[in-house]
Image (tube, rainbow, N blue to C red):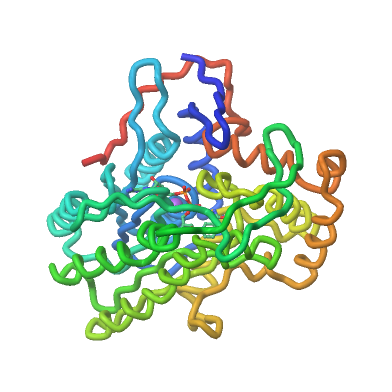
Length: 395
Ligand code: NAD
Ligand code: NA
């Protein structure tokens, strides 16, 4: 079939297998071009199919020659209906990994559930014996708690006061005022339940209890801070409380890993266009201004450049530098004083009329469509493609 983008609000309903494959190939080539990284050899990636998780899987496999198991929640294709992009990404990744002689298997299902944890543990037991690294990169709006069955929904709201600021609809380029009511009731707790650290700890505990963590084991999860411009709705909002919890959980996990000489890290990453971040109000306007400034400065990075730098210069460097709160920072270029000062100036000037010039709306839009395999260079979109693509190592 010929597959075209079909958008509804902040999501794209279709995705292109060849475009997704090309994205994965480009990321693999980038990692190979940067040379070997002396990293972990048996890696479990939770949230492995898109964004930072996919980049982490690619960097582990093609940078360090690691065997990888990927866990994700993606929609398989059906006759006449394309899969979700993470399905095609994972298919392309495994094809390339297997060709390179690397072990790669995947599990598609709810990572929050006991069933998927058990299936993953059994696979590690049978095939790898142990893992020496777990990358935790889930981004989900909901979580069903495995013990109570309660279904939590996360919300993106400010805390304490109404938030009012500019935002952009990146499909139309229209800049408008948004107003978001503050969190109420159980909003904060619900968001922490979904995006906080409880599930990360459950995974590590389950693996540890079964003896599946190697000596010197490490685990890493991803966080975000961002500037004062977005702080009311992000870092000081409900999602920020979840990130606080995730970051605190790193210390709890590190304590539990002491007998193994293991360690849990949080890395604070840069703001990037992913399926998760497109849904957050205000962030798309911030990102389009940030991209403009960072590209002008020659310091723009995507997920793969970020994770390559994280592994090479931080995680597997001789020393792993962290901030006062023990976090690895690869948002250092985003947070540079000159970059943020410039973004803050542009923010004041941003209107529907000025944004095409002062912001990188085109770059935002391209990155957004790229997530779904569209607008990817080197892909012939007029060509008939088979939407039914298998993931070779899917369990
Ligand atoms: P993403 O949407 O690209 O990836 C999410 C992954 O989680 C996918 O592989 C998806 O299949 C998987 N997933 C979602 N729900 C699942 C479930 N129930 N079971 C199994 N798998 C599930 O998101 P991302 O932007 O790469 O985010 C990953 C992490 O990085 C998040 O913690 C996010 O907060 C953080 N982060 C993102 C940004 C950003 O700007 N995008 C910046 C800094 C940190
Ligand atoms: Na991810």
